[in-house]
Image (cartoon, rainbow over all chains, first blue to last red; front, side, top):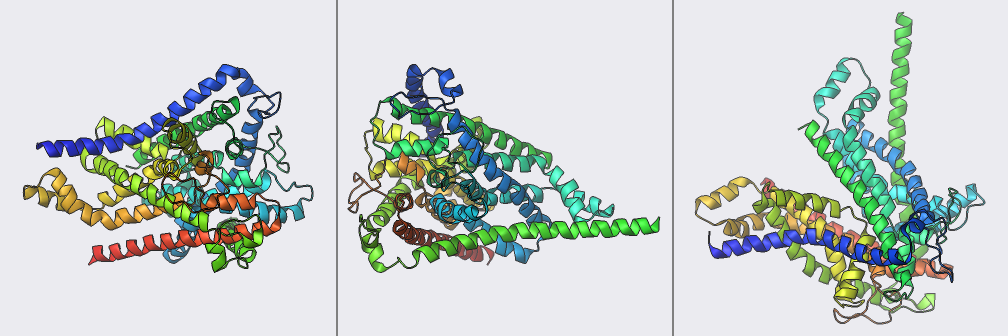
Length: 291
Length: 290
């Protein structure tokens, strides 16, 4: 092999390796700052404490209110995105003809491509006022409005990944079902969806991960009050909103407040990274089933 | 017996029709949401939108506020992001698709890239804050913001470039090898030119994602009130989505109208980038068929 060919190959390999460097960099930065944070705050206080007041004169660093706020908004988003996403995937994969798909798919792609700050605007100034007509005691910053809007934002992701999984199911299974006299609904729900189960689950898990990490919708429309409550009509603060809140202020480097955003970020990273790994593993299994 | 069977058959057909109607309704609701969003933004911001709005600097008064600083900031950051991310992304994709094969290293890198693509963008912001702003001392500059966004879009660029490379028929490579070309000569002279339109489409889509990103840039500390247009990669800056966020967060309704006008400009920018990508894709597909 010529020397230049050899150099080029290693250069290209180096660029590919940079992606590993990104992961290592994320883990290193989060670990260093989180370790500094945990020197001042015992880990049990952080993980199991029920009060989050890092900016008060007597700060408390119990992260549970942020976790519960995140799960509350994400849970509402999932209640919207999962059934709607699955139904629209079933429709696009099993019912719709090519002409309808050509109209609907680009529209879903547009929905997926809209910047999240726009969805935040929509949640705060359109959806919440609309909901307040039905639920009079809904606070103007609340978990419900942004949750619903986040669900709409994630719907295209659930729909397109589930549809891919369903289209991967071999035709023979459907034909066998029709031959036994099943209707299209029975074939869809009792043959195709179970056959594509691991692929659909992978889509759902990825959607949960997206919801947990979503930032701007909640930063705009859910408020900044860390509150341990399952009540979606109240204002809550999510983990991501807290990071934005501190970043907007002028918190000097090296202080405990500065380190809290990395500790919260670490928690966020571990959660979403774990979910992504499970999702990737399920997708791989689905591919093997019908290879 | 036969009456029972017929009734059962009718029941099943009704259930089938009801299910189909429900699924169609879901799709219509999703489309209606998009419609409501567009209507809401246009009716709020349409009146504020003007040429003055685009060419003015921000102001404490809503009626005089403009987006020139934010628009130039966005364009500047995205241009630097492209310069940083595009060569590295293409090189990484070439390695994985043309050189790496099924080696263990290539497979680990692949799994890692899929995972990185799903890491929340705000985590990249924390990485940028710790690595670029603090450790490498770039400060809250355009360079720090663009470096952060470059890492964020790298997985997207790598994935789309690989797809474009995979679409190049292997007979082209074999013909080139048969003529005695080396691996790199084959990649550079044969594979890349054929894959170029597909690769370019991927760039545009990746950059149009970056232009709408808000959270990572807020995290690295991009300022929300800038009264000048950036003039070097070391300038402090703001971008369009951050400016919109700043206006939405204010209590006064006049600023909400300004925010809506900003959203119209941002979405118009995005849609024209996407339209460019679609145009390229169509052109490419037509040439591929003939």
